[in-house]
Length: 136
Image 1: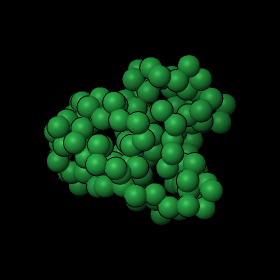
Image 2: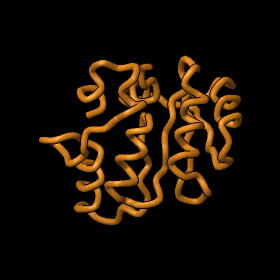
Image 3: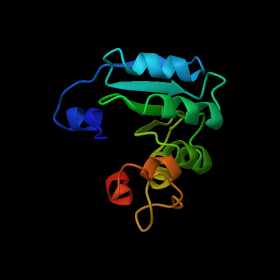
């Protein structure tokens, strides 16, 4: 699925999404069919864990134009990697307070040589044979 949100933002446009804190696949499935361009799953201030998030992303995978974005709990390579590996199209990273922290956050999202993310995308690469290229 194309990342319509990324394309719109790069073109100077805006995108309409919804914030999700309720951890049930039915919530993600129903909300993804309401016309939103993205659902932002809050894994910082809600009880959403990686297993719950994966089920929610699977439930919304049948929609044509609604992409999943995950706000992780911290600027941490393991949290970011897992969110991307389960299929997030975007990551929101809280608590970035310096240039160095911002640089590290970007490195955590990218594969070598531009970053430090290990390869293991599981669901993320299922529908994109060029996932490494498009993800970076």
